[in-house]
Length: 364
Image (tube, rainbow, N blue to C red; front, side):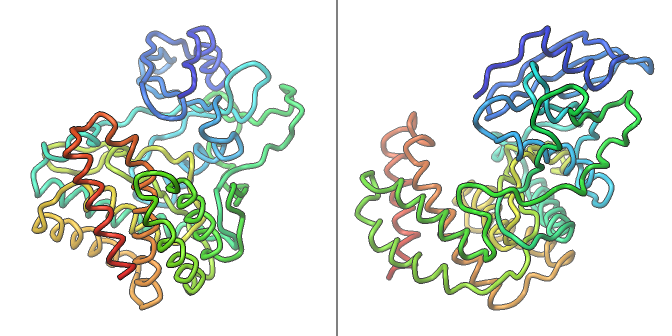
């Protein structure tokens, strides 16, 4: 996690976006790879609750982080996905932690740690919302390459006159810059084929598994991945993929399960919709509960809502999704030591055994 900006910097960041506003309260939020603070501000129209998000560490590269306010504006205009209204943003600054942006604070409660507090009906609504919103996201924009989505700076010399700034008191229409969203690449790309990006990502994960708890599985998994992934067909173009669409990034009404906010759009992938569906099913359903009846109910709600908004049929799509489930499991195996560092040893061993059973279904 990066260091939280000092109060003086927060005040200056708000002034850079909305000069007529004054900061009354700052409440930093813990966790994550970027800095988020909840602010109460006084504006000419009255008191307002907003969120300040900045990226000054190594977690999300600046050229990737610059895409988030633009994506939020694009989603607000062209989809029903509940996202915060962007007040304004600054792409680059000589002495403030940039990029950063201000956005409205949405209603609802965080549901990341409340899975078992929600009723089955509420969970079904939450997953149906996810299917509907991802269908809209996947049809929003397409790219001819696969990799991380971002925005390259207009200038790199850091002068005030060439900074890209959009704010509540500026003449620029906030969010009007979504046209320069592009695949800026990452350590695996950009690639012209989805299978090439996925293979590079899986091989890196397998490298990380070598020498650890699952070391004995690595040779067979590597052989499978190096045969199965290059054989995948399609997609021909890349869609916007929110690979981290998980309960921890959602706000919802805890009684009804209605999603009131989808957060964390700073690190999107231009990738395969099938991969996105697999990651959501894994993180929000299959790894959350071991109740087979509830799992089936939530999967049906998620898949049904997605199909209602966007066709996902076809053998090639299903095969890409099947392989994506394995690649996502490799990430979970790599994260196993961190996720269960403080867990009871019996629980830690049980989760490891589940990983082994899952990947064996691909290898046997």
